[in-house]
Length: 405
Ligand SMILES: Cc1ncc(COP(=O)(O)O)c(C=O)c1O
Image (cartoon, rainbow, N blue to C red; front, side, top):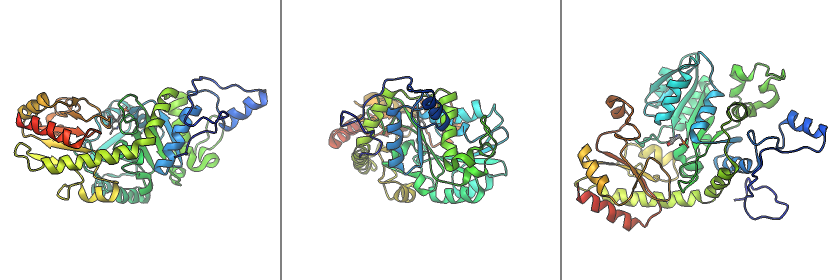
């Protein structure tokens, strides 16, 4: 519980907020030293003590060599990929990724000449899609809202064999409280901290985490001399990748996390494991009570033995998780249910309050019907991010709304 907490001259118990843009030097030599080594603080766009505490705490929680905190989960995905990909490179990505990740692939990396192939994230399908130009395999810990969990260990072994980076969007892994992909061999984790890590739906944030690996010694961007004539791989070894993320995402891209938000996220991390554990118990309770309800056409919860995600969830997740989906069979039924239920309807996850969403008409509405169905989104599907309310109260509200269907 102490990882990341800086030593404070006043003995403060907790993380102070450094609301400061620049850090001064006493002498020319001190300034020169800080610019040359990158150690210490210079300017908060690159690194600041409050954000650094968050980075160190995240590294400890997920077993990372290094973490870089950014302004949002989206900024994290963007910076992580920017540091990996160049014109002509290819990515093999899981079908049914978060919509804005697909948007990044098409509207940004596509224009830069990067090609993306979408496959079911199974080792055989991924192997077939790999070419000599593939640099990264991109999957999510748990597909949203299909709630399928890929075989992370097998994908990591394949990536290692082929010399490509396995990048896992671990937003659903709740900052390690539910899943730690780096421990299974993923090279890079990107994640939104806006969800379970924050826990109160009050702040945006994201992070890129990476592990000790020799992989970066095979990527041209780490073998070519930089502006100072230094070869990143020779100078930094496995830290060459996170340093490039910091340079491109923060120093040049400016997608910096404010110290105030870093402070709130750090607070969230103190309780994330407890919250996720309680939310998962409640989600299981609801899933068990609702799966045989006559108005529920299908219920998905990775913690139920009959669920298609069960085997991988058992292996890779600390519990069945705080997410479940109900398929009520039609748009009309979903509309009645959501119109009746006395809970929040919002496109977010991981909040202390239970949040429901109708992916067909909201989060996935920009996709063609066929693509929505492929992503497991049907007109009757309702996604539930289970909160910290009393489980019996929640069940009563679900039963009341199902009664109106
Ligand atoms: C799986 C996943 N990745 C990334 C993001 C983007 O995170 P943020 O909203 O913090 O930018 C989200 C947001 O919903 C998400 O669900």
